[in-house]
Length: 391
Image (cartoon, rainbow, N blue to C red; front, top):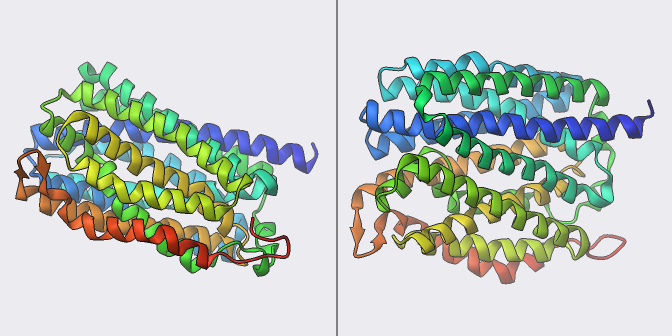
């Protein structure tokens, strides 16, 4: 089999792994959220710690994994092993007797995911044709969002099984994901070639990409993890099953929109796409803070679109970095740290309650939201001009 065909098959397998792995994760999130809140009687601050502990561990592991593979490219196989190890781990959630035990499992869960997912993203970017790299990465992330929809629906349909039954199903999908990744990496062999591009080919300074990643991830922190389910169900007095279906649907629609922005990045230039993302990220907390169904949905939708669109665009830029493994691990780490901080702040501010229909948990988000809107005019200044002009 030629190298081109091997790369194509590897990308297909990795896209499939994005679906099965995200399905495993998204099935577990609402189950853990409501188990912690209703059975273990965790406070909203505790729920935010549960969500962000996963993100914190994932941030550390993403940088570590990127560094290791940067030094030893063939160790990318560790990503497949880490993914499969999630299977026995998730079952422990159903045995937890306190929210602190949930946090401990979340930390281990986050570490394993932090090792596996950035390496898969690197492999997808490496194996994809350069001229459509952002669009292929967008398809990869779209598969994950489709799985998010499926996972939320699966939670609603399996709620009668209880958390133990749901964690068994989640574990099976984690194992299948590990095998899909393993087969893909066997086809690729190594991602050493990905570091061969010249620094002059970078469209935007990687430091700017890292900074924007931190900003967008902080602003969208309220739209990820267990806190989102609890916020919606309590603010709108909505059932668990209906909340899960609603969030899955919003996530799916946001992914369709994100693919359009990836097309803009490939066709009209990265700068134009980043400016639009800045607007969406800046508006999202203002909408989400108004406690009526349409505005909350719009806010979450904008937050998800901004982050989902930024991911393939940033990977497209950073895969051309001289140390692409470390760069992609770094952007994962920084985005996770920002989401961690944003989630903790949201959980702490949640106790402020509401003023009329405005939830005060979003007040700390407003200054950075305004900064994101200001950045719309500033991003163009950071664009590098390559030999072919602005891309």
